[in-house]
Image (cartoon, rainbow, N blue to C red; front, top):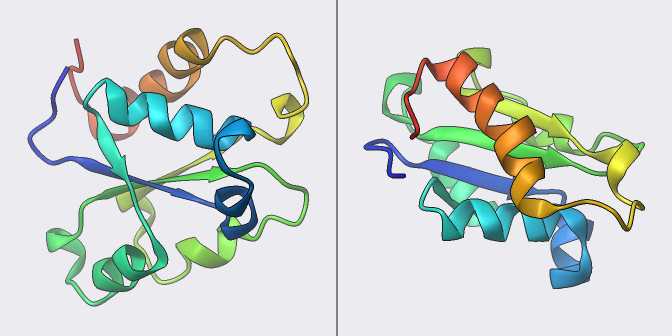
Length: 119
């Protein structure tokens, strides 16, 4: 699966600090592995802010906390340029199959939002 205009995946800064054991990091890494995007940094986000909306890459924000700090990261972007995937209710579940989770929850949202054929 490859997409001409790659997506950038952003995590809550505290989730990124927790590393690979965190569900949001596992989801973002799998998304990278299957070629649908790359994990962005705050510098990447700043670069996207400096571009015109039509020049920005598609952005996927993964929210895994109650505080919704990811909503602050989306501020200033047009709604059609990003998706917020809320995984808060699933983050403590030991039974999450990352591959199924991405294919059943994230990819359908990407397809619907940006009318993409990913397979």
